[in-house]
Amino acid sequence: MIYKNEKFDLIDEFIDIGYMAEDIEVKDINSKDILIKKSNKKRTIQIFLSFPNFEDFKDEINFFDEFINSAKVDISTYLIFDKKIKTPKFKKLITIFDTNDDFASLYGTKIINGKYENCLTKALFIIGKDGAIYHIDMPNDLENSFNLEILRIELNRAYQSYTGVGCH
Image 1 (cartoon, rainbow, N blue to C red):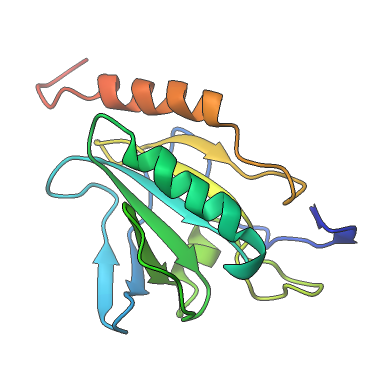
Image 2: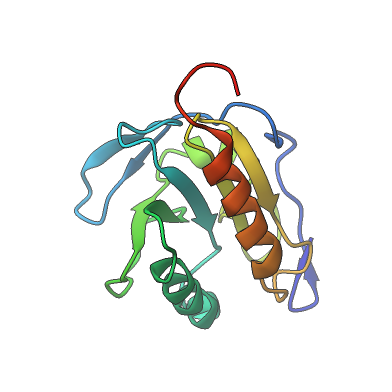
């Protein structure tokens, strides 16, 4: 992977589309421990969105907040950083901190060398209402934006795929 002409690597662990998501223990903005389950009580779609830091990616993060705010359905969207940092209040994004490396190691997003060593790479995971991973966007070049057209299609697919009534 690369960011601003600097190459870096991720840990070898990786979760893939079609697999069940993993529960993660994180801290919220008040340093309270919370458990984000692969399938939440409200049966909403979840998005896990990670970045190495806020400052370098604030324009894209703010744009994504507006994008999710315009969605017609409720989507629990978590903005994940490796350590506690200050972020503004968002319309829809819920800022959390992966201080114990749960997300980093279970989802394969931990950077293992270079300037951003031990940070999270730029990544997006869509977790369906059934707890399965429907989509992953992890650009090889962190200067590339997430593909929002594909994201819209995958969100629609995840929304329509689980009815909660037996086989489908």
